[in-house]
Amino acid sequence: MTETEIFNKVSEILVDQFDLEDDEIKLTTNLSEDIDADSLDLFEVLNHVEDEFDIKLAVAEEIQTVQDLVNKVAEQVNA
Image (tube, rainbow, N blue to C red; front, side, top):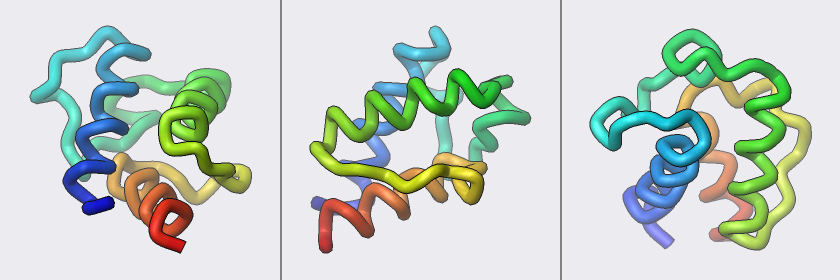
């Protein structure tokens, strides 16, 4: 699965979760600063991502941007 495909699915999840527009999500988007995601929001996002990609992500302190999340998903999906 390519990074673009992963980004597109992650973007869909974020758009649905936070009621955003597609163009508001970029790889550089900071989850807490740009879309005001708190720890519970991030937990829910990670659950959706795990379900969507059928993977398990470790606790996500290091996931701060959409790029970080895409990278973690890619590591798991392509392992």
